[in-house]
Length: 442
Image (cartoon, rainbow, N blue to C red):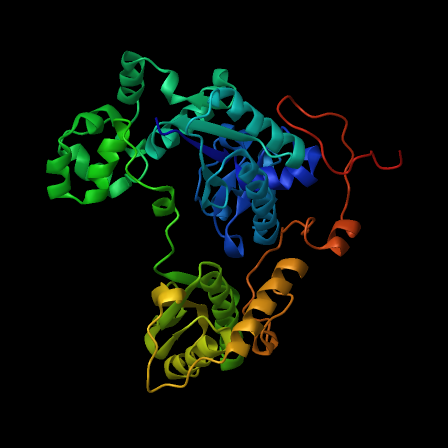
């Protein structure tokens, strides 16, 4: 029988902050989105006092003050590095691993004698090595492993690990009947509304539905979801972590900008980040989309400029992609406007290994590929953005607001050394204190 485990970091962003701030263990924490706009992550304590997800921060500021909630700006450098460490540890626990998101990955456990005990070892190791709490869901298919992970999170008596395969058929049916169809992996809000109209309201309803009829109404993915709910694994792990077909990088500015240089710096920054992701998945892009826009809620008439630039030769070269994007930006720029946001999208993404060459265009210079590989390697070793395009530094006006960002403890030694180290005495059950190892002054 196939068997998969889904390992998921609990409240990942807030847990990463707590690793280096053990004085916050057991206290409410929230993390805000870019520009400190909305609540994107909440600790269990913050959820308990009623702070909703994706709520604008200004609407919950009073509640945060009343309950002394600690608020952080997003620190993606810290979260990305903690994710890398977590995934490296998890890779030791299975012959095959597929990373699904920054805090989730599937592990192939087929043929393992005691998956429940293995899941507990995984969970304990993440606590011991990184201080990150997690839950493990185990199932004969990835869809059931996702549901099992949901159960492990919701029902504390499973101690963070729930194995779907240990249920009797009657117990499995009762559990599926208690779950709304929206809990099923791949069923979003809109699809759930359509399924509700077909009287498919619970996960059990979907398991018992006519798969061929659903395929005709929707798509083959939903047909496979029905099979997965019945314990038939239909998706290879590689399918789950398939390469992205679009790569988007965009950001609102902390203050509105009126001139071209900060927009050019912003576009160059987004191109560099997107190209890095493109190379990481072994792909090239044949088209670039560039957008700039003013504030839709400002006093002046809103402006949204967007254009696509096809490339003569598909590329993953930051310099080539940025040259095309800057050309597009100059076409979009309108003097006198106050710009609020800029972004890029890489499209027509294909596999670099099977790239079709243009016989009339010059062949790519192999030295540029080595240059890009060296830049990526240095940025991984020294920290993201250590090596960047000069144009990115023309202006900092486009930078986002991060008034409450924590130090980059694990990637910048200087920030780790100068950071405030609060005192603490003990940690609640389920947590491990990692850093600082000694109380200040001891």
